[in-house]
Amino acid sequence: MVAKKTKPKGKKRISAKKLCSSIIARDGVKKDGTLKKGYRYVKGGRVVKAKAKN
Image (cartoon, rainbow, N blue to C red; front, top):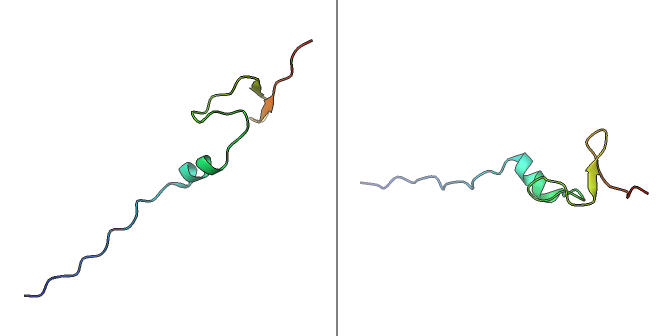
């Protein structure tokens, strides 16, 4: 009897969202998605450094 050849198992795929989120890091945003101290959201969803009120 001849043994059957089995296909090698492929690597587990990583979703594009997970891959990109680890590469593209925005200033002022922590790994868990919360804002760092001294940063705020502006119209359009951008993150900018907050200015002190005088």
